[in-house]
Image (cartoon, rainbow, N blue to C red; front, side, top):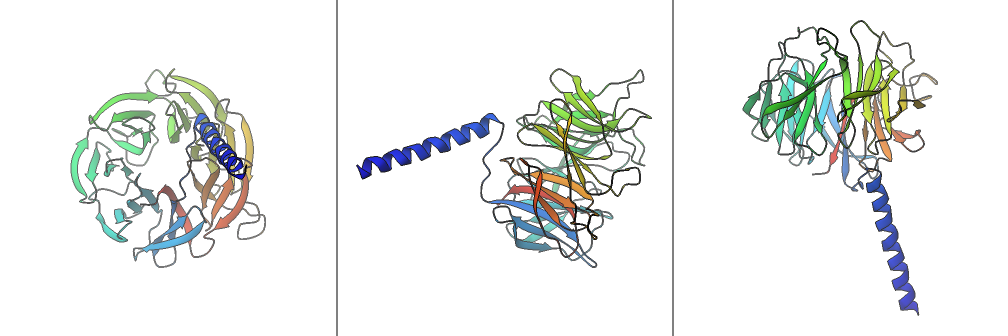
Length: 361
């Protein structure tokens, strides 16, 4: 009887696990491995470093120091977690071997954050006049080829061998936002499509300040504005090629949750043109564009009630946890189901200027 009961319990547990996985898959989620790492680029008074955080315990398990200070720092992890690219004002990207804990070298390119492709290649757009995009290989860091497109802020399109980025070809160097989003096949090495949202008679559309893609690659979310207009969050269907919604917003970053239900807009707060106090994340419905909630880092600022200036967000593949870095120091750990700030980590020693997420190598 005990043996039969044990088999029944084990069978029930197995069935429950399978059903849970099926539900997660149906929502567009992936189970999160226990060995994911969060990479946090920090800056202090004299030097910069990357804190490596184990996402299972939210504790620092390693520190990669590179001996100099980086302002406007950025960090980008390769899809397999083996390499990091650290960028900052005044220096080209520094590529880091995570396994060996050693810097490999600098890319012979300008100070634009690169994009890692699945085959250990790095894509980085050239600086003004933004006429090409260079492709490097890791770990040799040798330039392999150039694409005839000026991609900036490139992102991989999920489930396809494609990248999307703002095409800055022909635009002046002061940093005017472009309105053309080019889609590039990185296996063929050619541009295959482009998107201009609501083009006018002159061919100029919504000027893109930031964009993100849904986890299935079907929808595009843009923070942008028509020439002379105010910023909006725009939802765009890439298959039907039409605007789904438009909601007034502020300049900041936008990130789509892995389950495809929400879009988070991170208001920098310290920008002069933003009337919103620092420390806000506005949560929008990804289908209707309706605002759902506001996350404020109340009480975690330099003075009680000040909040923090949020910068960016990363979600675990399961979609249940988000990490939000702040200009004032800590990284916020947020429950995406309740939008509650569970805790803050890395609250000492410098500002958390950039974050990225990848599997442990």
